[in-house]
Length: 395
Image (tube, rainbow, N blue to C red; front, top):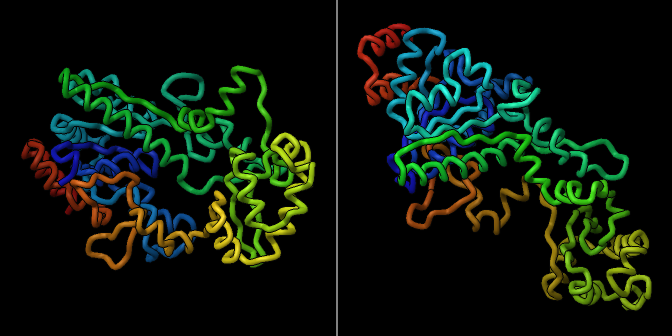
């Protein structure tokens, strides 16, 4: 049970961006049917495709496919097409990140599907949108979300090469965007009875993520490039290393407001009284010197020392944690960042929203390939001869 109990979703997707939408819908109570080709979503083979043993558990696949039901169909066959149409007819939502040209070959473009099922909410996730010269270009998050949107350029430090974003970050941002659109369309459908096409793309969500810089570019015709930490114009909003080789961020966005607390914490009157650092304007023009002074201070003591000083003096800051530190972090666990996997002795990452009346104490595992094919097709009223044929083929 959940806030979306009773909502039925057809999930025709591969890898991350599209399936992540279905995983969130499943977490929130929807019944999600993951439609896969006979060989399965290639995401299932992530570990072996990167040279690891296929026996290693596929944790990323679990994150984006937990709680779904797997239905195997060959959509290039008459039986597969008939079965899929039966699922669409019974569904409330159709989610896909299949490229539009591939959908066209299957007569499954959003426009074609909405003509056949006008009450269906259709969520389309693409790399670059469904129009324009690159609409059929294959899109991955580091390219369409990171590179083409400008995100990676703004993450560069000076003349350093563009960094790589962590795996799946852009995919999961676009998943949240698509989810929001789908929920909005479901609300409208509750008033009008009509579904609609909801579309987003990796590139468009990337530009939204970079909207501060891009809005300045649109308004003023230029935007400052990324700076390395030694050259940033607000040293109060910067990262620093401690004596035991940990990193943290000072969060003094309101530089003058946060300056006194920091000076109290580091107990360096010489820095506090230095006219080069007296106000935000002076620190901006002397940022390198101020950063060098703070570097010397912070590297003199371990992280635990600075944590205690910052908390005692009211300094706004946060540590830069490793993944091992994050999963052990008391606050991350208290905030519900992780959730048990039902029937397993390990945990996974939780969806980012709580519903107090529907607490999520555990999530089901990702389904085995095709395990729910016949049950789902029976439930949606697929013709008996088609079900029997698909059952024989599965044997």
